[in-house]
Amino acid sequence: MYKILRKEYLSPTIILMDVEAPRVAKHCLPGQFIIVRTDDKGERIPLTICDYDREKGTVTIVFQTIGASTKMMAELNEGDGFADFVGPLGHYSELIDEDPAELKKKSILFVAGGVGTAPVYPQVKWLKENGIDADVIIGARTKDLIILEDMMSKVAANLYIATDDGSYRFKGNVNDRIKALVNEEGKHYDVVVAIGPMIMMKFVCLLTKELGIKTIVSMNPIMVDGTGMCGACRLVVGDKVKFACVDGPEFDGHLVNFDIAMKRMQQYKTEEGRAKLRELEGDTHHGGCGNCN
Image 1 (cartoon, helix red, strand yellow):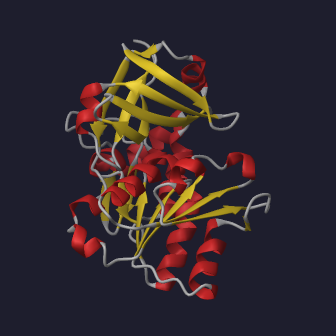
Image 2 (image 1 turned 135 degrees about the horizontal axis):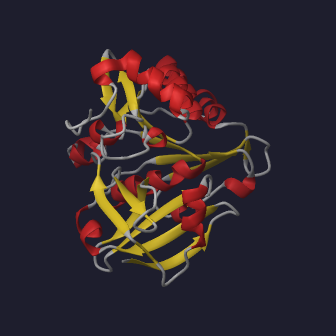
């Protein structure tokens, strides 16, 4: 059993948990994810890693209660545990492999939407620990949905908050805030990392392509199984078929076909839709396990 050591509500529907998982904590890096199951019969749920403490042997996860499985997770309390807590999975952030001296020369902006703030945090924290500054935009519909502001403010060079309804700080979406930073405040960025809802990442990429800024996105939102077997996270990157769980979750945002990915997400929700996708996609329907029929 993987014991829950801390549980905190970040909003009425968003929960943070510190989970005792020493082996995962020892090996994980920013950008990777884990898979949890509440019990032996539970659904596998992939979640990006929000933080980790190698000395304490803990991994921090953040999730939003949406369906039955996440509601079951929300019912767990401190002292309870998960039946499975598997990871780290996926590839870590490509920024980690870059020469720190070269990274220090770059101006980096992270754009976090809603729960996407959770996987942004460990990347910004890692950069801070290595002497590399990064700006961060956190965006949400309203003030009550802004999460991890205090934690992020301690690691970001500059933290900008944007709410669609103007209830807190800048009024507008994250794209409006990027435009204000670049066009009105004279900011220059070499790299943007955008993590959040699919529609947000799509429009961030459209804007940054206009601005000529390299952009990385995390396709974690489309993962279901997380092991390459179900084929749910199939997407087209450039002219190649990729799977978010085994090839990502991070990709060049300017090469991701978001329209295909979002349409496919809707189709995948029904048995009829999955059957149609199997027929259309043939051998490329499944992921990277190599054992699917």
